[in-house]
Length: 325
Image 1 (spheres, helix red, strand yellow):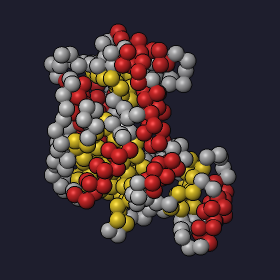
Image 2 (spheres, rainbow, N blue to C red):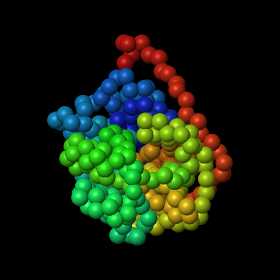
Image 3 (cartoon, rainbow, N blue to C red):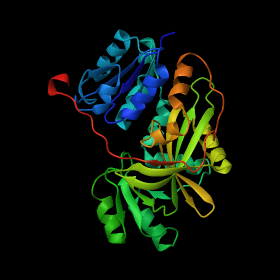
Image 4 (tube, rainbow, N blue to C red):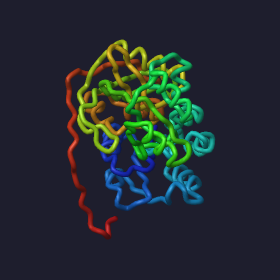
């Protein structure tokens, strides 16, 4: 059975494209799209395809036509704005013979609405930082000593750490909260920060792998340096949360540890920027996706990696003649 993968909005995620090419060797091809010919990950694929911006009319039809023409087996995106599109139009992709590697629309929309995710975590009684959409409710909680400064003020539906500001005074909170609509006030999480790369089998709907890393250094919202860690208690918390909400495919979770308590902060239903650390430690999500697309379920292998393995990102360049772009 030939398996062809379409990676949307590949951008600078060269490693992910490389991993799928390696795992698909002899089984099929990797196609990558982007709206810019200067997206380096395009040139790692078997075939690069330039497409319009996501916001332009006809974008969905273009992607569906690629799926039909190239006989794409599975499709996924590497950027947040496109995940809702894949989830919302799942049936159209299936009709084209392509399986979107994405969670349900409800799970995706819950992930991208940070206050809605906060409410879901509270409902499941999973520890998380307190959040407020209403400024007066925050000020009452601050006056009562239920929350303290500093706090973060951020767009409830933002991504990639865009628009996040730290506020150290009530005046700063009021100013930042009023800068735009839909701003959320979030309790400052000052513990140890972790990231979890989770795979939920698309056939069994069960978690089959979890990789946890302690974040040692961040840059532009992504993990720059990290070290692999294990904790069975955290594995249990993540597995229970992800399966209860109904996520599917690859999930990236941000977690804080305060004292002896783990708190889930944010959830992204896609490959996280730090996934190469997991792959290098043997947590092979591309292979699991390919097995699912072949109609085979994956066996559970939670925590099947070595502790104490460090990842250190560094810059690399790609060179092409302009006429090759």
